Amino acid sequence: MSDNQLRLVWIYPDLLSTYGDQGNALVVERRARQRGLDVARLDVRSDQPIPTSGDIYLIGGGEDRPQRLAAERLRRDAHLYQAVNNGAIVFAVCAGYQILGHEFVNDLGQREPGLGLLDVTTTRGEGERCVGDVLGDIDPRLGLPQLTGFENHQGVTHLGPTARPLARVQLGKGNGTGDGTEGAYNDTVFGTYMHGPVLARNPLIADLLLKLALDVNALPPIDDRWYEALRSERIAAAQQPA
Ligand code: GLN
Image 1 (cartoon, rainbow, N blue to C red):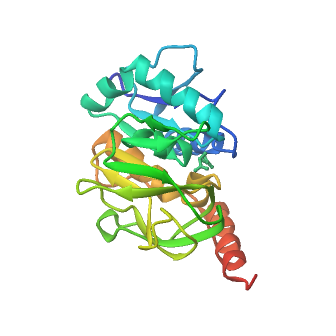
Image 2 (cartoon, protein in one colour):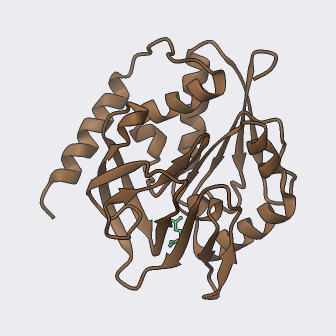
């Protein structure tokens, strides 16, 4: 971070914002401002270059065709690689998560290269689409409470040796491999299947991104009663028998 300003970049809202993932940008922005930070938020459309000077980059989910277009443009642009090499933080949801990996299956049924920023590979699941509420235990190394979210994907994501699972599901499919893992991360690059939007349902993940960006171990506490009420409601709803 320079000039005491947090630069938050939301990648391709015109292609990857189908499932309310704009909420993730709003939550990071608000929680940073509540800590007295000056925030510059940049929404980068798919016909614009990605800035390399961002501190946190967010990527949302999307249907199969916009996902392919986004992957093509991100590969061509290449600035996200540079930003990650400079230590930037990336947090991506569903289609965005798949794009961060080595490859996924596109809307034409072909293997589409991803960015290779996460050691994961996505294939097309043979079974039913993974749709529904998810509850999971986040990797204890991250020291975060139970993950809650909503998933809707056909892709099944396999983790390579340098990616750690973000969580282990108690409910839902997560990566869909049957091994109980959900999402993946490696240093400063995070991927999850959770919509919700995930940072509204799990605001302490937003704080984790802020702590990484600021290089601090703790942030001043803020009044999270509203978030806690939403979390309890969603956790209770997820646990209701179908
Ligand atoms: N198109 C991808 C899949 O179905 C991602 C979907 C999403 O972003 N929700 O696997």
